[in-house]
Structures are given as C-alpha cells and as structure tokens.
Amino acid sequence: MTKPDVLILGAGPAGVAAAHRLSQQDQARVAVLERAPRAGGNSTSFQIDGIWCDFGSHRFHPVADPAVIADVKGLLGDDLLLQPRHGRIRLGGRWIHFPLKPLDALLRLPPAFAARLFGDMAMKPFRKKAGRATSFSQVLYDGLGPTISESFYFPYVRKLWGLDPDALAVTLAERRVSAGSVGKILGKMVRMLPGMKGPTTGRFYYPKKGFGQITEAMVGASRAKGVDYGFGTDILRITREGNRVTGVVVKTAEGEELRTADQVFSTIPLTTVVRLMDPPPPPEVVKAAQSIRFRGMILVYLILKTDRFTEYDAHYFPELSIPISRMSEPKNYNSAEGPKGLTILCGELPCDPGEVWWDMSDAEIGRHYVDWLNGLGLPVTCEVARCETRRIGQAYPVYDLDYQRYFETVDRWLSGLDGFLSFGRQGLFAHDNTHHAFAMAYAAAEVLRPDGTIDREGWARHRAEFEHHRVED
Ligand SMILES: Cc1cc2nc3c(=O)[nH]c(=O)nc-3n(C[C@H](O)[C@H](O)[C@H](O)COP(=O)(O)OP(=O)(O)OC[C@H]3O[C@@H](n4cnc5c(N)ncnc54)[C@H](O)[C@@H]3O)c2cc1C
Image 1 (cartoon, rainbow, N blue to C red):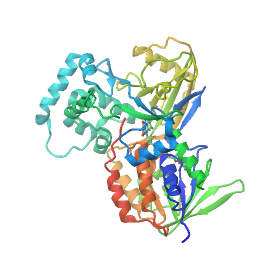
Image 2 (image 1 turned 135 degrees about the vertical axis):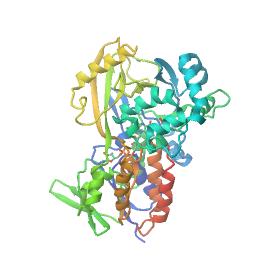
Image 3 (image 1 turned 180 degrees about the horizontal axis):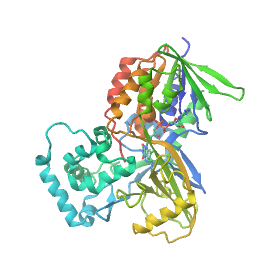
Image 4 (image 1 turned 120 degrees about the vertical axis):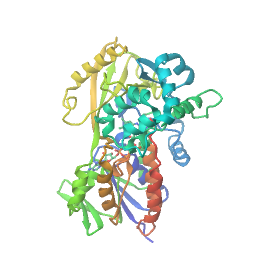
C-alpha cells in the first residue's frame, strides 16, 4: 500500500513533532509549510551577540510524558541539561524564591502578609459561595482567598491579558493555576524540602543552544527521513469541496501552486484557517472566528556590558508598577560560558498592536525598562550596549467570558471537515506548554490510519485527554 500524503501547516513544536513522529514510524510522506524562515514558532531560539535567546523564559518541564522526554533526551544527548530552578518573585514588596521554598518563604514573607494568608486558609470553608464559579476571579477568590488573589494573581493576569480578572473565564484558572488552594501551595512547598524531593523536583530541562534546539533537533531527524520543509511559505488558500479539504494553495515565484494531500494537519491559528478557507465557512463560523482573540507580546532584550546581572534565571513581577510580567537572563538558563563581559535581560511585555508600547522604538522601550528595574531595586549600574525587541502576535489565547462559545462554533465546524485535523496551541486555542504541543502531535500521528483517513473516535479520546493539560510556569 502506498503511504498517505500529509501536509503540515506550521513548523512550531506541534507541527515539527508531528512530522518527526510520522517520519520515525514511516507512516506517511510528509511536507511542512511554514511562514517563518525557521522552525520553532513561539519556542524558537536565536543568538544576540553570541548569547542564545528565547521568546521569553522557556523551560522544558520534567512533568512531560516520559515517552516525550525519552525522545527529546535521545535527540539532544548531552546537550540537554537538567538545571535547578532559581527564580524570584515580588510578593508583599519582598523578593521570595520561586518556586516557593518553605524556609525562604517563612523568613522573607512580611509577617502580616503570611498571617493574612493563613487566615484565608482558615476561612476557606466559610468563603465558598453557593453555585458554580463563573469567572477566573471567583475561582481564585473562593480557592485561594483575597491575599494571594489580590497581591499576585489579579494584577498578574491584568498585565498578561490586559483584562480585569472578572472578565476572564473559569477555564483560565483551571488551565493555569495548578495549586488552587493555600493548602495545595503549601503541599508544593513541602515537596521542595530535602528528603521529600524527587530527582527532578524544582528542576527543568534546558538545551545548551537555547530552547529551540529541541525543535531544531526534530527538524534534523525528520529531514533525514525525507520530510520536506518549506520555510518562508505564504499560504494563500485552503481549498475544499463540500466538507472535504482538498489542498493548500501557496504563493510561488511564478504565481501560485496547489499542494494536495490525504490529510492536512494544521497547527496555525484556527482563526487564520477560517480566513484562508476557500470557499469560506458559513457566516456564523466566520463571525465566531473574528471574535476569538490572541494576546500579543513584545520581547525586550536589554544587552548589558557585564558578565552577569543577577544569579537568578527569572524574575516574576506581579505588580502593575512594571508592565513587564517576567524577566529572564538567558545566560543563567544554559550555564553558558558564553561571551565574557556581556549579558542580556529578556523582558516579557504583554501588549497588542495599537497599544502604546507596540509602535515605540527599541531605544525608547529600553530606557523605560532600565527605569522600571531601577524602581524595583534592581539598578542597572553597568553600561547598556543597546536594546532589541521581537514582537509576537499570538503569545496567549485570550479566555474571556465569551470565548468558549466562539471557540466551540469554530472547532465544531473544523472538526467536521474530512482530510483536516487542527491541533497545537494555535490550532486548538490551548493555553499549553511545549510538551503538551508534542503530546498533541504524537496523538495526531497515532490516529492517522494507513489508508490516510483519521480514526475520529481515537482523536475524540485524545481531545478529552488534552482537557487535562495544565500549564507549568
Ligand atoms: C512568553 C512565553 C513563554 C513560554 N514559556 C514556556 C515554557 O517555559 N515551557 C513550555 O513548555 N512552553 C512555554 N511556552 C509555550 C510554548 O511556546 C508553546 O506551547 C509552543 O510554542 C506551542 O507550539 P505550537 O507549535 O502549538 O505553536 P507555535 O509555537 O505558535 O507555532 C505555530 C507555527 O505556525 C506558524 N504559522 C502561523 N501562521 C501561519 C501561516 N499563515 N502560514 C504558515 N505558518 C504559520 C508560526 O510561524 C509558527 O511557527 C511559552 C509561551 C510564551 C508565549
């Protein structure tokens, strides 16, 4: 039997992992179409002045499926480091180790703050409201109480999504807040104690050449097995006859070309898919897709003429006085010996096109960045070489109060198409980690039958599993 043809849209972790898995198992003839000049999507890496940088803090979390971890270890070998997490968070005006450690939290949390936290824990049974929570803020308030909600989560989500916590959906709390009660937070802290720790507790995997080395290694392995990668490809249309997707029209030097396949595996934003569909979907699907929003982000790279700014891998800034949500120092992720006398601070500045920061020059954002750090007691005393930025349009799916019905309208229609499967962070509007994108990709490869059709029941089972994916920070 001839192998089916699979056309994969997008070469982020989901697209690349699907290509890798299909080629490993010799299941299909695979081609990948990617708009960007390189693989990795939001998980890519690149160098600035000899230092490997990511699009914000990226860690490969040890909670990933053991099969996925084994595969990544096999691909990267000694290049995959297991690093201790060593970050800080601002709580109650003090710096606390993050992830939280019992002794550190005990010594550093302002006593009044800690007392309020324990008070919230004691009051939990009386705080619970009748009926189901209807918003992110309500879930947090019920579970964690006012102290941690108001001093950490509420300002943090305001910054990340540009929305009030009352305007965000319950799903966000389910996907993002793994410790939903003070008791669970304490449980996590106890597991950080010596003797209670597993071999990977408080640690993360990180490749020597940046997080993107993981997808690069998958590209290399799958290319060697015949996968064709078309970087810099402009997709013009996705063609269909009735409810069957028949191919993808791409731009070429001569004009355009129709690429046909038994299956199109799409990991590009579902909103883009709706826009590219030819003929267009029914009006209600188009309208629903137009109502789905992604949050953008500016990654701000402050290049400093010093060996190291701090010993910490990441600083988390919940408070609103600094618009940056998190700052990482890439050199501290891979213990790089890397260029002496130079380090970089990567700030994550959540921002959409049209907001004040989006059109600001790099130099101006850099000046603000230095001021924000000075204001938080992290003075920049060395020479600033320059500031560079990168802008990503689809950093986070926005789970506002209405998103669910819009998403379900689009998802239902896309799921009814033959010859088409949408997955990945952008394809399922999933607030996920890279290992979740890999798990989705492996599942997609698993449900592809030798005759090129999809085992839809198998896929439905996997979709139910994806609902349990929880974001690790
Ligand atoms: C700031 C930040 C920090 C994060 N930190 C972590 C972390 O520490 N650990 C972790 O595991 N995960 C982290 N993540 C999540 C991680 O980046 C994603 O889970 C992962 O990149 C999702 O992979 P994906 O392939 O589904 O989507 P993407 O990475 O978004 O890839 C989608 C691909 O589709 C391409 N594409 C889009 N439109 C088109 C088009 N029209 N034509 C062709 N191609 C197109 C894009 O160029 C891209 O390559 C973080 C994300 C962000 C934003």
